[in-house]
Length: 221
Ligand code: GRF
Image 1: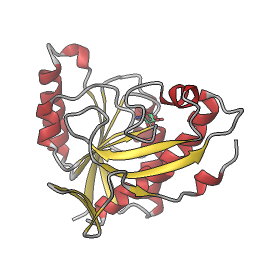
Image 2: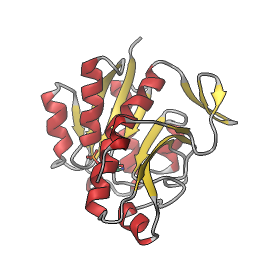
Image 3: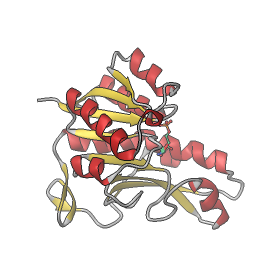
Image 4: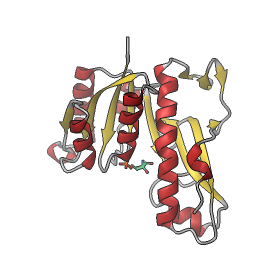
């Protein structure tokens, strides 16, 4: 059966677009069953509409608490079916209820070389720290925010004249290559989370995940 992916967004959805493009190009053998947003105005919803993908808006403000919001999302996602649930710029903190329901099949992308710079403003923080390299990470989601087992990372060099905006642009281009690639590992059943850690092709990955070479990494500032 074709691997089913549900994508959760809150914003522009450029990572969602990269996933849809990879499906269209045949490099990601999966079907996006649902795009779910907590914001009606999220640009990613239009991208889903253009691709003919079912969409849902579940506004967190309509729910008494996080648990009720998460339960509503679970019901909707499971109605459509998902072998992997993909967080792509989804800006709500998820409860243990949600995270455990999708244990081992919930994945996030984060714009830093985790464990560095969990949370927001990652590009500015990397610059402030004087880092010479920066990048993005894809990880399984656990109860610890931005702290789950790492699957893959892509690194870029930080130039002296980089700004948070220029870094963000280059890191995003890496994200758009890295995320569909990791999801294709899932779709091909090569990637799983075990009690010992992340396994790719039957081998345990190191704590920082697979260090991945991408075309976008060679881009200059
Ligand atoms: C990405 O930078 C991702 O790393 C972070 O949120 C951003 C989403 O961007 N989690 P987009 O909505 O996919 O364009």
